Length: 135
Image (cartoon, rainbow, N blue to C red; front, side, top):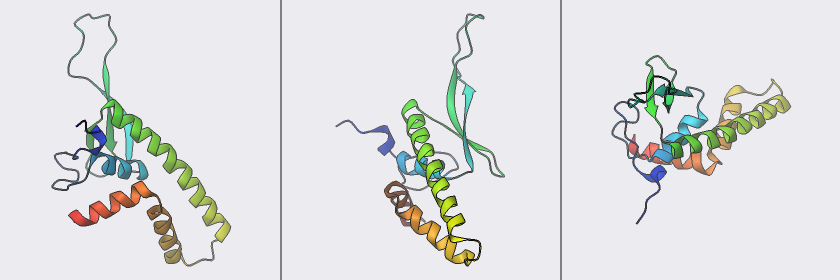
């Protein structure tokens, strides 16, 4: 049986340590958060020809207090970029909702609305439910 790499267990030395989350679930969180960015780092194996360009591999960088990185496969990178595109449009819609509601609304009610909207996204709800089980 051939398992999709995104449905395998996520492993990292510090992020989500000890959880049973899949790579798909964790990448969904990364894409929905503003705390991560896509970058690249030189690969360990380079050409011995000095005129060849430097080879790079994609990584996700956590931009919080403690910098942390996660090396991505091409499939993970494609999924991350796809989900980032979705979350950008989602955030645009939420920001328009905020403008339509006006600034007079209770901010706590607004946060509840935003969480409800996020939970309606199947992939995000899958991540949150799995994360709650491991916490």
